[in-house]
Length: 201
Image: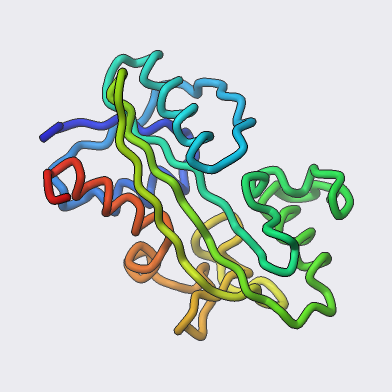
């Protein structure tokens, strides 16, 4: 079993969550010393995750974990989808001005486009990839839920304040880190990766 994994991200929210999920695995998670610029222009989450994992592997020459996640909303035809992190800047639905943060601009745009829509079904999805150089492994995780009518909670990041997981009366941003990691798309995908790495699958 490998003992150390590099994370192909400098996103502090993702790093914190991923480290928490790996905590009892016996695998040490390393943060990159610098951000590697990767053009995330793939047609799928899996393709983008692989591009990130490969780029960081080439830079650091060690097993690298990358993931690409997004929010998929049924009533918006699957958007934001692979454009989740930069949805605010897309012409589709009109560009949303960034006032405080990109996350808030993304949330504002989704809520604007969802005004008057009763079908609030959505899901978060993650594809996680570990690149070992010439080969790799990947896993998928999904969390079903609905889009709320207004942001709730201060925890998490991204679209968490407007996403309510199925079976819960809280937004993702109102869950404790432990509750979130248990049900989240990222938690599910990464626990599958840990199983692979430990020979459990």
